[in-house]
Image (cartoon, rainbow, N blue to C red; front, side, top):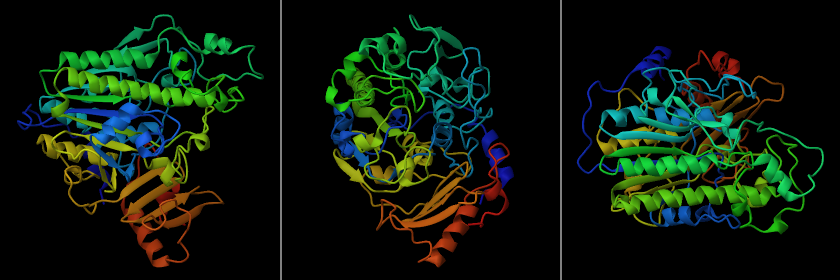
Length: 493
């Protein structure tokens, strides 16, 4: 178990003082992160309605993981786990934390990672990589220690604040520390509700779409970064806000999907913005993301970089339940239990695709249990740097190169508000509504029951006790994101 003081020291432990050099054959690294994309929303993971040809191609040319887990069921803590290698029992950020509200003049940002936090980007930067984050950040607003430029990224372009990312036509994005005002947009609320359908479909687009679509600007900056750094080793973290609602996407993409999917317009009753064709719009957003992935892959090919670039793709958590999205219509969770916000499988099991020509067998599959905390030790082994201090992850290089599954040295673990989950081998403990009268504790054997349909808590009390003990040892209290039940009496069921 990590002592609280050790956690503090880890968060303040800077990367090695001197810049060194990567291994001679170390690849460029492109990590693409979707936002709220479900386990079953890509063709290569069984999706039958949404077209994702570029991601399916990436999968056919690389490896598909079937038991990969996000860092958290929600945005900010999941990204913290990805960048730091510490799961939410030890991570700095363990929940979404807002620095302001929804008004135009409200301050931007979420809880900032402290200065000196050990991050993947910082370690790669010290190894001589050019580093860029493009997309949605969510780990510190303007002028804070959590700004990407203070967390190992030479270049940033996108949304610093995840609330602002609820609108795909924002008044501005950020280029490093400066606002980039987007032409033809202006400010308007990303959460609106109407009482009845508008007069015609075009009125929706006039009200809720503007001139500059943020994902298109972010893609432009991404391609420029690759152009500018084609002769240097680089790490690109492309954190798309898609398909997180609101339902906003250029109409040309919506028209690619059948009108008969949508008999009833979405009026904003589940928050976010109305849309005349919600199912078509949601599919169109994912197809737009797929086209962005295709543009990145094409740019790597253009510069002859594809063979020496490690490309990784995943999602920050499971599919949403809000904003007019119908997860059942798309079978977004592929039959898994739970959606975004849940520590059940549907909330945290996510697609994970990795391509590295010459190292990873094309069209291969791995069922190695893995998670966001594994990125840091994996890149450390591939690039050739030492990780200062312990992590909650393990290197996946053996799995990527076709080796047998490796037992995890640490358990997969999540905590969020009144929820806790942990996986040890095939056993999974789920605790919900902690501290409330209707609190529940469930035990599942994922090897026999991957859909979590049969609670074994009463049938296997010895396993339940063991898992509760492991859950208690997997965490330390957080001074910011307190959990009274876990911090006080971890064994209350």
